[in-house]
Image (cartoon, rainbow, N blue to C red; front, side, top):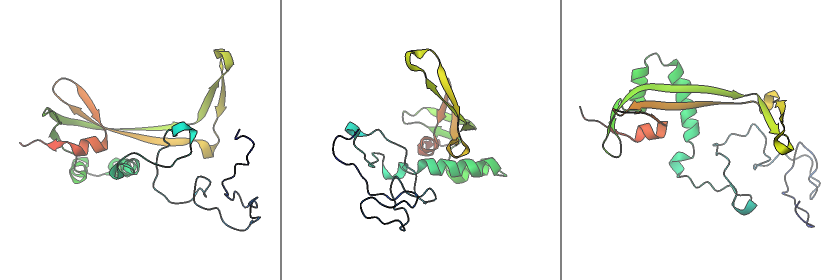
Length: 171
């Protein structure tokens, strides 16, 4: 509840008249109520400070679109006729040194596809849960990508960004 004041963002939704201007013919404006077909760089939802609505993203500029870069990598790598050449083109080292100088060797690229098709809500008091299948529009698919490097004792799974940041080992 927002208290006794009227809380309105001034967005037009689904062609309904804007309650402040009465304008029913204008298309939706950009923002969190924008049309679903708007093209934009994706930004994950971040925690809000003190419940305030904010769109600030504390990540550095180069990392803001890394999820899209990884998605493109997954799509192309899956159909690459020569995975070794593809990795070279992408700048992924086969033998590398980490920040501490440890030698790493690339063993495999791991891709996992996950699709969420339902949700659960616990009952109050913990006596069970409610299951709800998700409608097609709410089902979500995501790919996870990891580069499995061996350091001589353990397997390390690195992100695309971390793998690209490794120093190439000199042969």
